Length: 330
Length: 243
Image 1 (cartoon, chains in turn blue, red):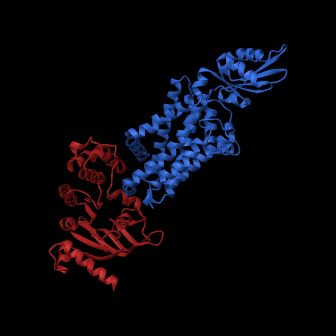
Image 2 (cartoon, rainbow over the protein chains, first blue to last red):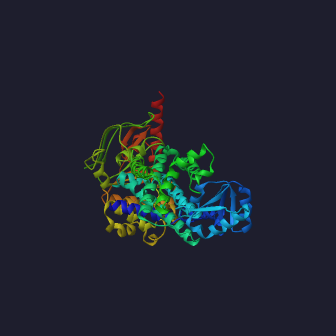
Image 3 (spheres, chains in turn brown, cyan):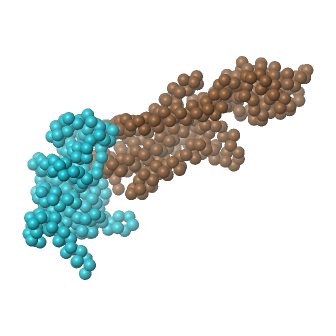
């Protein structure tokens, strides 16, 4: 165990001393999180509340809500938008039902007033439904960014570090030392876990700075570790299968694999905005499933226990595969 | 006393490339033994087998009486290697690099002595990547020596260094022998082999074509320098291959 600790410390110090690594581990995730959380609608929804309107005379309702200046109003949607911090108004001939997340409770009376004005009908009945979705769009994006960074740190941490150490003959030197294969792989995995936590903490602090605190929990810690194992295992497979005379090809392959996974996932936007059949990929690809589990432990969104169980089994399996693929010796 | 004994060593890589063909040699304890040969002759493959990085396809090897690959766990505790163009952890200091390798062998108490003996004391807090090529090579050797090894493998240790740095490193290599360490050296530089080696072995396309002393090889071909004798030997071998 002593060799694992010393090797992990050496890898961590060696890599986190570099400004490039600090950028990719700390600044890049914060930039990504803030860009998506604030830049793409998040800022607007932090100043004005997003409202989706559907049903009978919806256009009139949209106009009335827009006139208040309090809301960013969209036509269409369904109750699932509440999961992402929006209010949903379903207008019928006899009334309207307003679905809202807890934070938007103070706006419900304004919405009711605007809808009533728009429809100009007497005896109009309103019902309101508070949906237990205690998170905002920003919290959704911040958590998704943690997932995306766990994936990219896991994959690139292995392919980048291992390829560099292979080029520098450090791996050859370690292969002739008493360091065992599993000790080397475990040390590399520990480095991945450390940078994943560093990224997660940076994103958490960015959340605090914009007034969106994320709930830290043992579950979050456990799943960040497991997620790192899953994706570091993927990186190990890519590295292991790359011909060693072209070892830096591993980074190219990692880019080709991870970018679609990162941006065609539910990390930065809800999957329902993606048309079928692509939505199926976005919903069920590994990073999205991992994000679902992360959101369940940070935001309290219920998720299937099978997904969490799959992550545990997958994490341990990928750890085993990774250790096997990262052998120091032939 | 024999430090390394290799018998009928053969290595065939995936894809069928035969890197070593029936190679047999001994290395005496405490000598500097140089492996010579053109690129692709099998020098690095031999070192990789002897340091337990890869397994031979067939043949037997012992290092300090320990069988390779069966007793590799024990072999790795008593040998050290400096791979060709080895870089340490580039963003760690000289001290941290040497101390890390010491920690793998449980020899942390030797770190300061080794740094001092290789003339690295004034650079101990300098990052590896900031060092000149010659000092990087010294750190690499320090990282090997701190293991307190019985056998050190140096794969092209002076490649790419300027003449002054090369000569300075030769002194370091000679001091290893003086310290009773067996040195297994691979090199392209014949002047280096001539200056340093007790014995040389010449590999050509995976075959061992000579194991002798530098003086005997010069005598055999009536040449003044090892380089001239080596070139003559290569011509002879190529002629044999051609006919």
